[in-house]
Image (tube, rainbow, N blue to C red; front, side, top):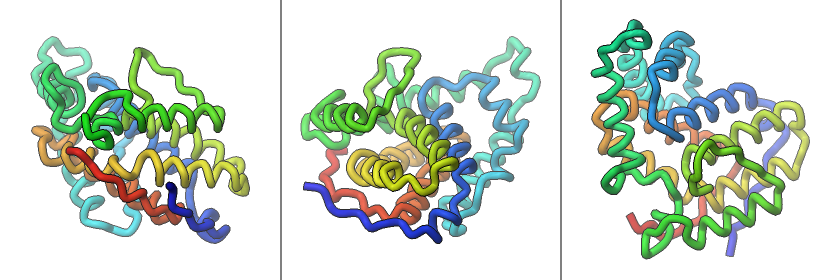
Length: 236
């Protein structure tokens, strides 16, 4: 059922800054897993995240995403954290809601099974396959509230953990293979579509920029780990 993945050369692995990759995965996890809070956005502004975001191959998505997110953060009202005037934050929360949460059907559903099952259901067969994959590899996720395991934000949480381990275990072939299989079989087949929809429907430059940078990061991971996503039919 699954396509073979190529082995990753030591030269490529040595060129990867896994701590940097871990940081990117963590940012995307926190930005995508739940409604935004002022402290999160302020933190991204304070650390000037767009200046430190890697350019990779200077793809257009990267350039555009950096500009959009950077301009949004530049215009962020620093006093908002302690202010009763939350219009800016409310706008951002509304954008997150219509993209990823609801109350109506989200425009960029963040769960993989909705893209991969004909009935477009949550917790469908592909979610069960991911659950089995995590169980076999001993992956445990600590979630704040019940959430399907194939939420895009949780994938970045797993990558966060994985890159942290690869920084200290760069020659762990089993861990490299795990990363390849996670990307090829469970994440990349649908994640690009999710980010495309998020970019199309976002009403703020915050989520437009994040969707472009997230997609570009996945493109880089696909190249780094020599992984061609499974050619699966998408139902949205």
